[in-house]
Length: 212
Image (cartoon, rainbow, N blue to C red; front, side, top):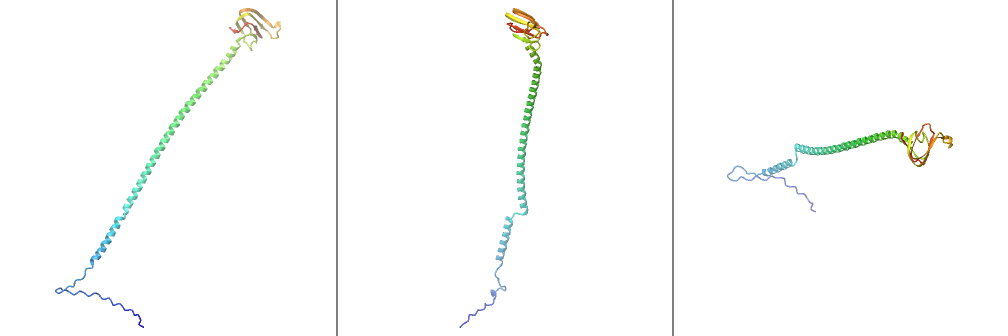
C-alpha cells in the first residue's frame, strides 16, 4: 500500500533580478510607491472629513451659549408678560376697591343723613306731642268732659244750634248741687271754664273751641 506523504513546499526564492539591457550598467526595479501614496491620501481625506464633520469645542460652546440665551430671553419675555398681567389685575383691583370705598362712603353719608333727619323728626315730634295733646284738649263736642284730663280750662266758643244746653260742674254725681252754673242758648255761645271746675257738660251745642 502506498502512504500519502506531504510534499514539502519549495523554499521561498526571490525573483531573479532582471538582466540589464545591453549597454546599461544599472538594473531597472519595479515601482512600488504609488499605492503607498494612495493609502496616505485616503487616510488624510478621512481625517479631514472627520475633522470637518465634528464640531470643535468652541463651536459646541457657542451653540450651547446661543441655546441658553434664547431660553433665557423666552423666560424673560414670559416673566414680563406675567408681570404686566399681574400689574393690570392689581390696578383693576385697586380701582374696584376705590369704587367700593367711594360707594361705602356714600352709603355711610346717606345713612348718617338719614339718622340725623330721623333724630330731627323725633325731636320735632317730641315737641309737637304736647302741643297736639294740648290742642286735643282744646276742642271737644257734646258730652261730659273732665277738666284738666279731657279738656283744658279756658274760654270756649261754639256756633251752637237751635237748642244748646251746657253746665259747669263741681262734681260728677249727677246731683243738682254739682251744677256751678248752666245756660240754655240758641245760636253761638261763649263759656269760660275755670281750672277749679271738675267737669263740663253740654248737649246740642256742637263743637266747642278754645279761644283764650
